[in-house]
Length: 218
Image (cartoon, rainbow, N blue to C red; front, side, top):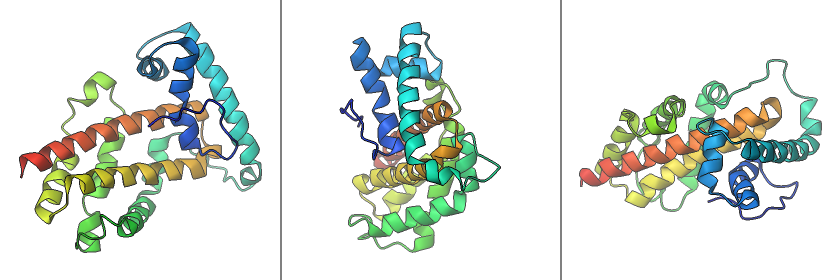
């Protein structure tokens, strides 16, 4: 899940940099990564964690700045600050990219479903993730997540395996993180870390919810 490598190369993607961030901080301070995550989200307060987090963010920013120097010259005037806005602006692109990944996946492409039916539940899941990620951690679990419920039931009826269902959520994550990587030089880096963390947590809960309804329908 999180990278174990404390020394990150310049070629590392923003996704890898951010997903390893809390583990690196936790190891430096001898604490649990989940506590670092709660401090980063604002649910807990720790000057020590905040200081190390700031240092790590500055290091990541320097790496990304060096790599994206040439890309900045092409940056449009209307920069995007938050992940939610970026995803909404690229809704159609995410749907098309997700479908390409689905058709390329050896396990998913074996399931014979028309392209329209294959993609039908995915964008509602993405939109629902954007809503759920705005909630606090203790509120996320109580969210209705209707899109995830419908997705799980639909895939069970269409003959998808549980692993195929889970992989569809992995592809959603892949598309969104790829989009964030492409536009990271246009975004506030600390906000992007928070947004990617919250998006991932919301998507994980949706995966669990969809799988639960899938199994309940068997």
